[in-house]
Length: 365
Image 1 (cartoon, rainbow, N blue to C red):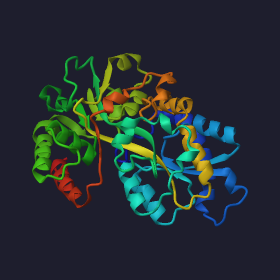
Image 2 (image 1 turned 45 degrees about the horizontal axis):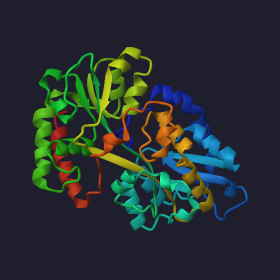
Image 3 (image 1 turned 120 degrees about the vertical axis):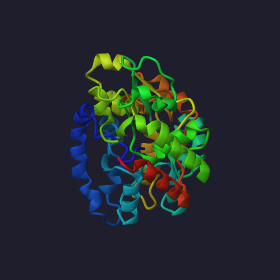
Image 4 (image 1 turned 180 degrees about the vertical axis):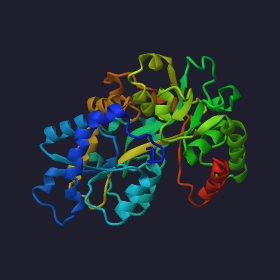
């Protein structure tokens, strides 16, 4: 999912409906922080979840608790790095965690995950094979079950920009100078440039990375107000920006009260593709409630429940095919819009090539 540096502050309307749940979760998580040894009668009736901030609807948690007569203790993280560091430092006690693909791979290699017992999961046939094909880190769901597959795209105010190509080249338009932003995120922006040049978002070729750097510096950056991962949604909503790279749910939440701007807004993921993410549900090694963890994973992939999750955030039901028939809201984009996207791989030592390129792009801001 989006790292904390990539995401806007919690959208104002969503925050209102989420606050009560978060307060309860903050109180309950003290149980996890306290750690503790063996399983008690009380702990066997609790499911300890460590998930991204603002990523599971309270209604879904409440339904699971009621159906199974249990209590969910919900703790949150804002980035894969934060999650991994806490677990490495001994912050255990969780049953289910939600890492992104590259961290699933890392945690498998580190022996940090329990194997998934597929005999306990009746809804795994609902998982979209296209998502599993993308999830090269664990295509057979031995250690992880996909939760959500998503990507950033481009939002355009068509009242201000009536004619445009639905690809990354929109950021090359000098006539829109001073009205556009891109994310302050190295892999996202560099990935978009690489795709525009016909390369993989995970290339380790120095020449290709240099070409992407030059495209951004010479053709895109001069037209941008800034690289912005904090307030692009608010800037778009108040009319400062007409074109923004970002996450659909952030933009549409910010314009929820502006009916005209909602009608004028088009969001697209370029057909050429770009960087994407898959967040997965994993059972942490040493989990106290492995059976209950399997029940929760299976519960999420029940079509009506997955549809409720997707509708709450305006997501397409990317990871669950039958859920698409249960959705009541029109999603901001479609699963097929992600067909040409690529997951961001762990680049190892070659990440330094990207960091050097990004430094030259950000110098002078």
